[in-house]
Image 1 (cartoon, rainbow, N blue to C red):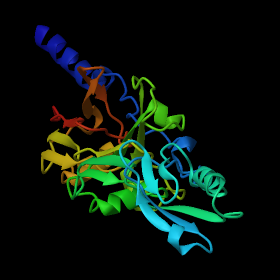
Image 2: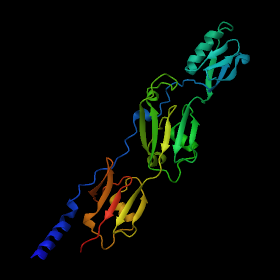
Image 3: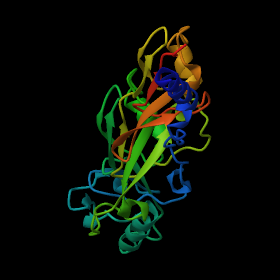
Image 4: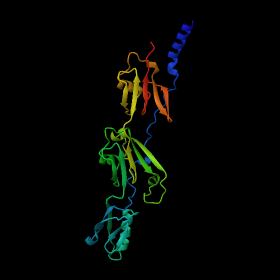
Length: 291
């Protein structure tokens, strides 16, 4: 009788085993790109130290020149001596020069353009072919920045991360005296970006740090043809993971497949449906059938 009871308990365990684990929760999804990240060409560029500007005074070749902005934000100009330029837009500097030169020439017509944007710098880190600091052009996009860095490496992960200081979001130059105690992180699906599925250009600001993490993996263990570690692609489902791992063996318990996942710093195990989507470091476990 005890053997029969033991067998009944075993059968009940097997039949009810798939319900002993909670369902697999949705993966952490890269949030949509906020509107503030898209290119805004209408914002006027603010001149900064080390920028190089071109000044054209129409009808006065002797007053037309190129000048590098010094560390204190000024440059040397004929007749006027040291002129403060940092913190001004090109239009504001044109108006300032026109007012000052009106003491020497009648109705001066002036054009100021920035020809080298050396005051604007960003950092490109992680899985790119040429990481490091870059000078930021006024109209540079995220794709242009990544291209300048040689593009993602074969070990690049699924997303690109932009870390931006709070004062940069507010449109203030980094030289202003604002406490830098809050950063915003913008996460962008790298595959969609490189495939052109994000149609609007992503805006990059002075002081941004662009980071591409290393590729992430998932694991498949148990009754599959090729247990092991596999690269996590976008929207990899349990069914796809099993296919990549060579499919189930004839001993697999198809109804008791689980996924182990870190949730809030703790490893937990969940019952898995075939269309559940995996995330980084998940382990798909295919147990052996008892029959």
